[in-house]
Amino acid sequence: MPVLNFHMVLAILGIALTGGILGLDRTAAGQFMLSQPIVAGPLTGWLLGDPTAGIVIGATLELIWVLDLPIGTFVPANATVETVSATAIAALGSPGGASLPVIGFSIVLTMALVPITMKADGLVRQWNSRLADAAFAESEGPGGSVLARIQYAGIALFFLKSFVLYILFLPIGIAAIALFGQLPDVFQRALSLFVRLLPIVGVALVVSKLSVKTLDQYFLFGFACAAVAGQLFHAPAFAVLLLTTAAGWLGARLSDGKS
Image (cartoon, rainbow, N blue to C red; front, top):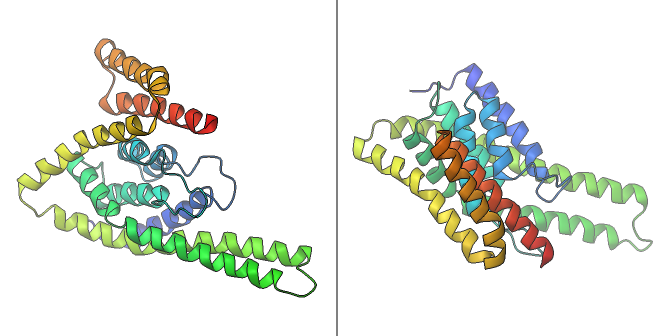
């Protein structure tokens, strides 16, 4: 059973800081795609010594949320918070390497928190809108220094939102992992099967949102390459999943850019 000791507290704070910075890449600043699950998951896993868990979680959640974009007033699920949280919970809750059941349970646990992250994102957007409205309500209009302060304040709010969510989610998730280990083997097998089948759900979502032409050019090509690599070179399962996901992600991005 993992113990919430000094080193684990430091790890939680470090991941909260890292996740908060990665979260800025979604809409607040940068947008270099570092906040995407396919990047955020492996990075978090590498920092915590379990890159395999990060790759599996990141690749799977990338498939599910690849086309769930924050466009206009739509507030999608915060895939960055979900991915970083799931990876950190799995890695910190299972020192030495998270098993498939633990990875599956971590995904289920964090996906159940999606409404909370969406609500938090919506509140931050509202607060930032009020800051801008208050500045432009001045009779002489906002000056350059005022606009700069508003911009920095908005970025700080986005960071603090993610940071606080990690501080709340991670200890609860680590404690839940300890309780999950006490459940009968049937639950372990069910969550292991869940992880193996979850990419199929992601593939179905990609297929339903991409045109047949894009699917043929990118996703099927990636799947064929992954299948050949798996058969001829005995590539690990997570490598096959990663290659297929990368192809689907590329096709989705190019398709979105052309539309």
